[in-house]
Structure formats: C-alpha cells, structure tokens
Length: 413
Image 1 (cartoon, rainbow, N blue to C red):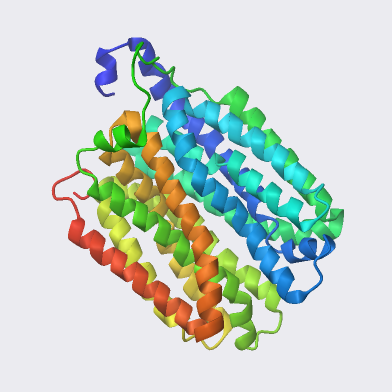
Image 2: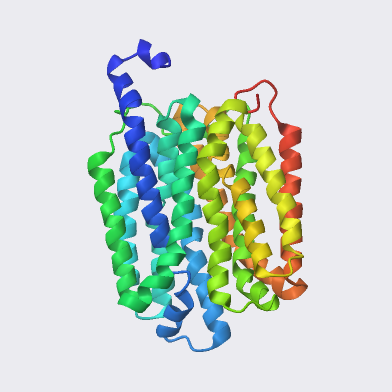
C-alpha cells in the first residue's frame, strides 16, 4: 500500500478489499446504463414519427436533436458531478445517476409529442452520467499499478453496452412495442441502482476541516503542477468520440452507395464491429499500458486509428468496411482507459474527480459535434471526405502527443 498505512489504519482495508467489488458493480452499472441510452438508436426515427412528425426531413432532423440532447446536458453537468463526487463521495453520485436515469428513461416511454421527447432526453443527460461517475470511482480507488487494467475492464463494459444497446433496440420493439421498451430500460437501470446502493462499498471520506474553502475550478487547476498532459488528454478524449461518432450517421448512406443488399442489418454489423473490437482490446491494452506507459500506448492507438481511416474512404464493398472498423475498434479500445489513467497520474487525488469530469465533458462534446460534422461534410463533400478529415484530426492529435510526451514519468516511461 501507499502512505495510507501511516495515517489511519481503518482507511487501508477498504482500498485493498473493496476496489475489485466496486469495479464489478461499476462495470455492470456502466454496461446496463449505456444499453438503456443507446437502445433507441434503431427505432428513434419510428418513435419520432409516432409522436406526430410526418415530414421525412423533419424526422431525420428531430431524431438527431433528440439523440444529441442527452450528450449536450451530460457534457454541461459532468464537471459538476465530478466536483461533488470529490467532496461528498463517488458512490453517492452513482446512486443519484442510476435512480435519475431509471426515472427519466421510464418517462420517455410516456412522451406524447416531440418536444416532450427532447425535453426528457435532456433530463436523462442532466440526471445521468453513471459511466463517467464509475470511471472516476475506479480511477481514484484502484491501486495505481492496476489502474490501466481496471479502467480497461470498465471501458470494456461501456463498449459492450454500446454494442448491445442497438442490437436489443432492434429486437425488442417488434416484440413488446416501443413504449414498453423504454419501461424495460428503466427497470434495468433500477436494478443497477439497487446494486450500487447495497453492494458498493466506498472508502470512508475524510470530512474537510472547518473553514476549508470549497473546491472551485480555479483552485482545482492551481493544484496541478503541470497542466499540459491534462489539457492534451481533454483534446484526445473529445477527438476520440468525434472520430467514432462522425462516421455513425453516414454509415447507412455509405452502404447504400456501396450497393449493399440489406442496408439496415449491415449498418448494425458495421457499428457493432467497432464496439466489439473495443471490448476485446480494452483490458488487454490497459494492462500493456500499466507495463510500458500509458502515454506511449495512447499515442500509438491514436496513430493506428488515424491510419485505418484512410482505406475506409476507398472501400468497394461492405465487408471491407466491417473489417476496417473492427481493426479501428481494437485501437480505439485502448484510448478510454489510457486517457483516464494519464489524468489520474497527473493530478492530486483531491481534484481527480473534478478533472475526470472535464474529460467526460470533452467526450460528450465529441459525441455531439461528431454526428453534426459527419452529416454536414458527408452531405456537401461526399462520404470519403468524412473519413479523410477525421484522419487528419486524429493524426494531428497523435503528433501533438508525441511532441508533448513527458520524459521519465509514470505515464510516458
């Protein structure tokens, strides 16, 4: 153990004994909440149409607004929840997120018009954030020597949710109806709420001394000696989600241009290939990063993902695209745990949640800007342009990381 052994011996056992249990609950919770957030992807346009929108262009537009709404409010509130978690406990934030999302998801099934749907999607982002809260808890409570592996396991759960959600969303509505699908999603998140409440054990938090000023954004930044690694990771976090999400909205249209037979099925396969590969690689790449350095691994993963975007612009059939997206997913799987580990190693414990909250915000911003940019560029300049522009952005980011790599540090050794 660390210096905790010299302070209060009562603080030591929870760190040793419970971090693995907390990791298991966090992986399950992140998996289930991400499923609930993404299962509406296949049938969102159908639900928008059910709510009274009839013009085809308007259906596409409102679907994009409703989907992005959750990530917008999540981006705005992630730093707040991170800061409150630093002060009052991360378990409390996960209880809040799971209960809030269970309620919001169930209410979406009761929406009567498109404005209520968008409003409730905004509410889901405002109240949610389980996956980001779990990332903060795992990053701060796992022994540093195992943080890459643990964050990799959590990233696997998140990616598995991204993989499973759209598949379940394609299967359930024909069986139980769209509204009941949302009620089932709410029930699933309520199980996560119960698991978090009763199974997770957090290290008792030291109460701040009387008169201790509350942590602010300015004081959190001033506590960080070298801000460059943290700022670089914020950019990488946003670019990673931008790279994934800029392609998502154009995949169906791209497949039509490739004269694919069953477009809907193949679009699901292409999207799932990236997520499946990330599930397979995240914990393995995280373990590698623990051994050779997180900075090296994140730089390498960014470079490989950038290179793999180039041939995607020139594929001649759908299976080439599936194969390339799978390979890209293997590289992207190493980014989430690497980013969190570098931030964790670069900041003091007392502001770790605060900074990881900002990292999550950057990811959400990428999830909002990616589809908007991909749709605009694809519509005006053609589908290959989306892959090339995203490639240039990721390659530039990898070059910056190479230039800023810390020398003889725990992240870059």
